[in-house]
Image 1 (cartoon, one colour):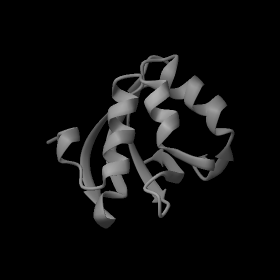
Image 2: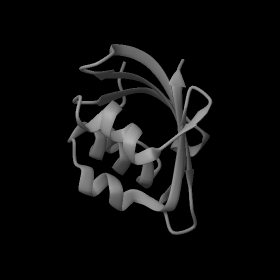
Image 3: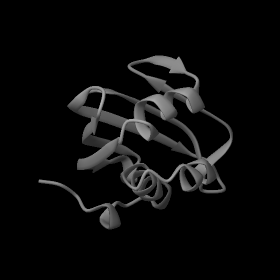
Length: 108
């Protein structure tokens, strides 16, 4: 079962999933707080380089199966042209301005 993007609880996370699924780099960048960071499987990565390689140049797509922590933790099927599909977890830190300050992802 998949949760429709429009039904995700947290507005910043909802916009993040929408930007990823529509391959909208501009909208994605606008969601990020200044100095935003990210980690993949527990290792900090360069956010711009990672998102380019893992999302935008390879048709990344998220299908959310479950959310928790007010919508800031997701369990999702993620697919891209490089790795195919895998079950992933996503955790988001949203700042007081409603922008994503950090996200962490990895295999679930």
